[in-house]
Image 1: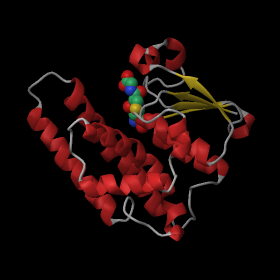
Image 2: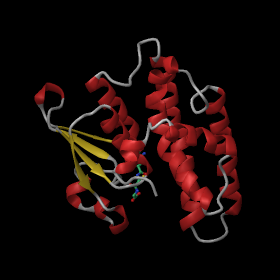
Image 3: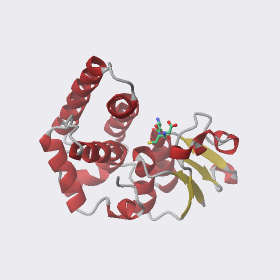
Image 4: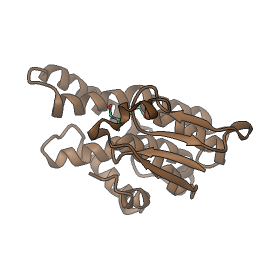
Length: 211
Ligand SMILES: N[C@@H](CCC(=O)N[C@@H](CS)C(=O)NCC(=O)O)C(=O)O
């Protein structure tokens, strides 16, 4: 059984999506980050970095309990454990490249964009512009590579883990674009809408992760 430490924000949404799409049984344990529950000592034992998502697999390697934190690590762990959404060995180089690119490039930029747009004191406009420029460049590359534009059924399984990784951020920016923050180009929004139309994200939306 997977114990899934969740709050309805973008990074936990990636794991919700995997668990639902893989039909893995799990117990969802709320960690309300708006109340600071991510800093409680009991949760810090599961993720010393004090962020969601995290999981405990009660049936981990060797039959032992295992904890995994950080969304990309959890996606890879679950892909290996279940044999689902990891693609073929031939897919692995692209899959790893884009997944780690999301973890080390897209993720930190997106997190900073949200921080500087919504929470930081005034005076950070230049920094925000740099983030927006980098973010658009990243999304353009992803689109050129076919990761977020239209794709064939054959390509779908190989890139779905990548999309799970990117999805939380697209969702977040889609919401903020309604509030007048428009760092995401129209074609990215329309690709995201297409994915929603195909029903890919329905299960995790029902779990309340859309804001
Ligand atoms: N690199 C981490 C980032 C996790 C992260 O930033 N989680 C946010 C929610 S989306 C969080 O826990 N925020 C609360 C906090 O930072 O105190 C991952 O990919 O899981």
